Length: 501
Image (cartoon, rainbow, N blue to C red; front, top):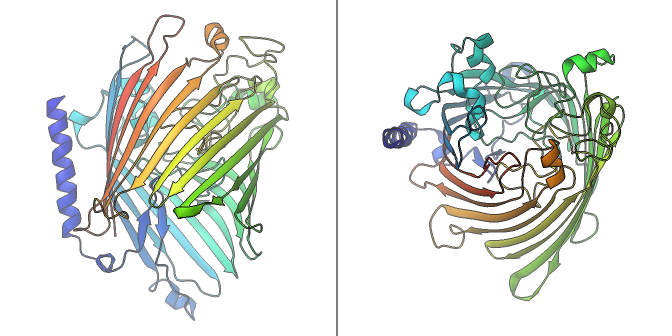
């Protein structure tokens, strides 16, 4: 392990040196910056041109060099179930945007993740045990039909769309990033989660944002190609952690469903002073749909303090998915009806969630207390990298939207850079308690047990090299033993470097 740590350090230093040698206009004014969740914010875009001939030469290229290192260590390794694992990814992306002509433009984004350091890779035969680092490679390619001799690296044309802008309204057609309540790019690894289809965002109405999308394909972060939006077929289709594994390709086809679609409609309104209301509808026709409404009201206090209480309600309604896939995300209730494995109705995906939070801000600091409770009905289906408990009680790597799960979170964040204390540095910590349903775990409906999670994120923007940023993440999870006596407690560490140019 010491050798592997030294290699990781060497790679990191090399990346910094390489980034420092790249000279671009970004040294004077950055074209993009990164949010805390590592998604990109564009500050400079191509300007409109008067002819189609000018659209391409006056377009802009956005580059990103990226490196990720992961280690995931179980307290109790279990043969065939839990194995300590680690992973790395070296690569980045090139995104090209044409200049707009009469409102029309185009974007393509090519992404790659390579794994050149064998001492930092798992044995290929063990890739099925990979946890947080699994998105740095395509496990399906490595498995190679059981031969385990496929390549580690993966490259994907994850974005390729046409865009039309009129006023404050934008239309996109093709492969694209689409951020909504349940659909996210979740760009915390090497390649973002993207969708294929049509979307529109309207901001022409005062204080209101309206958006809608129709997608027929999705590309998860560890896939090189696009796949079904909901069907589960191992690594061949949607194998996200929050997919309902009972909704298999074979079962869906047996019910006459061979090509699912994803429909999203959203509305955000700030017409009332200090009040923000969000509403989302997410639907997979002929299977299920979910609705969410959330309200956050900011109360400004003396001395620069503010307090913002927030409430969220989510409702998931069955429209045929229950009889096919069952109420449990693990697929163990597929084809069953009535009470089973701790669920009241195995053949229904009806479910809901309520959440509340209180956010306290002062200057460059923020505190948050959050609570969520999932009804004792079905697990919530969310395989598009948007998380039902996000912003309330979701900690790094934790999925706490199984039926009858209650969670509490205490979080804090501080920007030391803006406070003038530590140049370029900011940090966030959280402590989360999750209370899962012991009966469901005992009977095999879920595999999670009660736990507490400690998590810290730290970012550093390196002023000597504009566009260069490092991020370190640590998490410790103390969990109760499972019914079979095994211990699911673990710790993990992640290190990432980005250079934008």
